[in-house]
Length: 130
Image 1 (cartoon, rainbow, N blue to C red):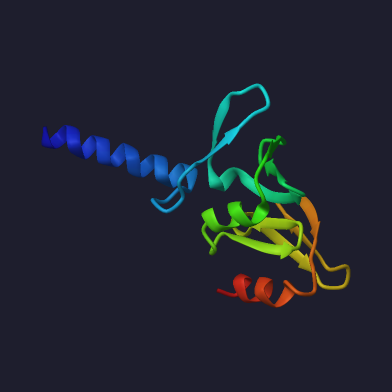
Image 2 (cartoon, helix red, strand yellow):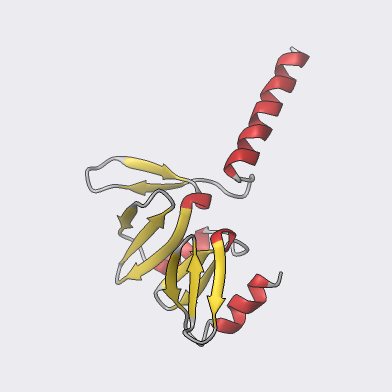
């Protein structure tokens, strides 16, 4: 039994290392248009775009899922150290951050470019140097 428990613990550790998910990074359940519920891991979310009462989730597998919920509500459920609001419409995953261009006021995350708002720049720069 001890050997089996050790093997289970090691396989869980390996899975956590491969996916980058820690205990605080719980998957998010997103409902699709066809009624299916899909589990999305936080490390696969590149960015979230606010669109009125909806949010568009841009994922690493070139998919976009739309949910009926305000950005403010999703922002509260995501870990602040990984996700930061860079514009009134955009929250990005800092784990996938590539670069910031201060001249054009844009951020590149996982190959996608997003605008930054001057209001959010100090917080963004502070988060990058943590």
